[in-house]
Image 1 (spheres, helix red, strand yellow):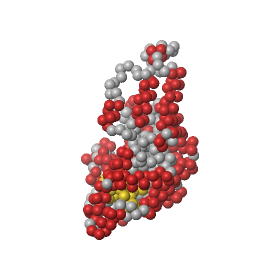
Image 2: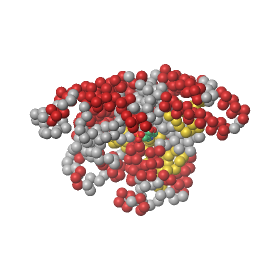
Image 3: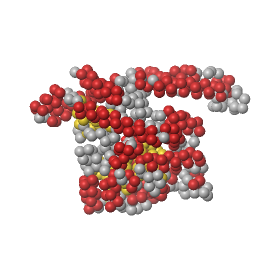
Image 4: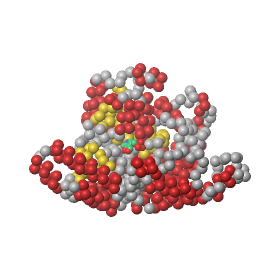
Length: 506
Ligand SMILES: Cc1ncc(COP(=O)(O)O)c(C=O)c1O
């Protein structure tokens, strides 16, 4: 696989073409496939977190820009080092954040999308990719109960979907033409309603659209970390009485901390009463609507105005596949359409479908063919099988909670609503001394420090991975199970690892 000078001389290629000869390309492809397969098939035996640190990695990779091509064989070895220096999010005991493994059919589709290199900006730029994206959007509408008659757009992820949603809500509900007049001339101060469990991308979006983070009202949550509907109503009424313009409620279907699902039907009713936009952030939890045993939690989703859902979270897609679903395509155009102003991207087609352009529905112009990986894996496995996998993730989280509750050295810190289990290590000595002294503050601090140390040690140890959640001042070890490789034995192993790690800290 050497001889790049020969490749330059291949008949039919221009001098210094970056095309490579078919035989060479085939071999490179085969070797890269073998490399990827090795990583995927051995993932259970790889350390969850690499045995390395930042300074070692600085020495590992050559920082000098290559002016001449490097031997592909050497590149393959360097790629092996990249794999070795990676955190294995697809490992069956990776329970941090919200990170799922990618399915192999999805990976294949992502490769094909790169080969096609479609820039999915409009029907004209990518006819079949546009159609496929529109199809998967309808599928996501159907799967989540949002409704298959929806419109939508695939995004890089949930943060971008939330930003798009709040931009739309703001533009649609604003009393002025904010697009032209700007926020300073847009009338009453507009307010958004969320909770302290809402993902931080919502605050960031409020900041970016010029409303400011202080205009996000933080509504109380109940003992299951769900939005308190009475408090919501009171705060909206107080804002109205104070001269503000409450325009949007952000409910969450699967909070990032505990997986709580806000009472969507009751919230939808309040949104309707006050003519407010209801956005549901289902970036993590949305796919759980496909699990029959969780469907009732999603009642009311069918009347929300918009919903975020990340296929790269719980639909096991390769990363870079979020989605915003919305009820009415006109709302998106009101927020984002500019085709009449920008001549080089103007669509001259006469047929309405062919005049369709994604830039009228979101912020991005250049967009990769994200829909293909989702289309491929949904077709390959079928939604029933995917739903079964989601249901199993939920059962594993409940199983973990059962063990935690049955143990005298663990404490469950939040109910398991979907597939997240939050708990802490609570050794008998601390439990007993806390009981004797009655000093809650000191005990909480002690437990917080102990559990933070356990988490850090587990993360760097490479045998498992938990992240954390701050639940009303309590440091929780948090396991988010969105992984079709995880088994009960991985849960048992992880809980034993917590005990073993705690013992090793003393
Ligand atoms: C509920 C929720 N919303 C939004 C996001 C942001 O998604 P992304 O990381 O794809 O931008 C997350 C990420 O974990 C999330 O859990």
